Image (cartoon, rainbow, N blue to C red):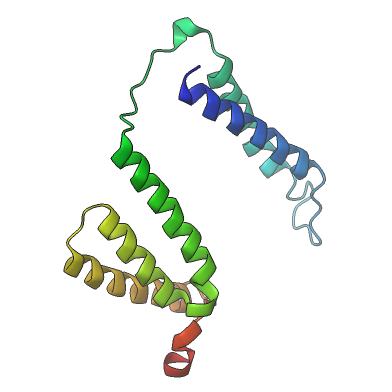
Length: 151
C-alpha cells in the first residue's frame, strides 16, 4: 500500500467526520435562508469523495511516486512540526510578534537559511504582519511581553 493511499484514506475518513459535525451545525444568526450549514458540508463532502477515490482507485490508474524521504527530510519535517507546536504554545504568553519572529527564525534555519538574514527577515515579517492584522484587517493579536512597550 502506497503512502498516498494511506494518507488519502485517513483524509477521507476525517472529512466524513467533519461532514457529520457540519450536519449538526446551527449558527446563532443566519443571514441567508439556507444558513451556513451547506458550505462546510459541500466542501468536506467533496474532499471526502476525492480523497476516498484516490485511496481506493484501481491500480492501473496509479503509478508509484518516489517522495524522496530520507533521514534528513524526515528530521526536518519533525523539527518543522515541532516548531509549529511550540509556536502554538508560546503565542499568547510571548505575543504575536515575538512568537512569530522565533518561529520564522527557526524555520529559516531549518531550510538552511543564513542566520543573519533569517533573523532580520523574521523580525521584519513579524512587525509587518502585526501591522497588517492590527491596522488593515482590524484583528486583535496578543502582544504578550511587548504589551508594556507597544500597548
